[in-house]
Image (cartoon, rainbow, N blue to C red):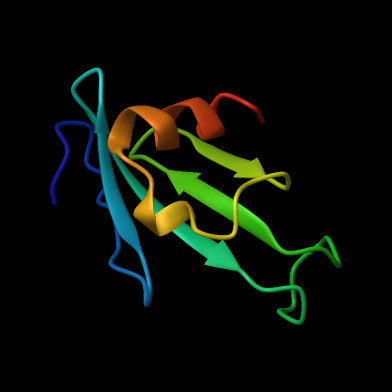
Length: 76
């Protein structure tokens, strides 16, 4: 998906797309055993402008309706 600012969202395994306020987010989980700066699992919300990391989120986040998942994103 292209953006007017030249950045593009990359598809990731297990991702889910979220549309909120005309912004498209790629949402995916980073497991605790991945090589990331934090040892904890986290949920990443990535747009063409911003990346947000949420550590406290429901295990069944993929099943949440878009408005509820958007509220999870705001917990950052």
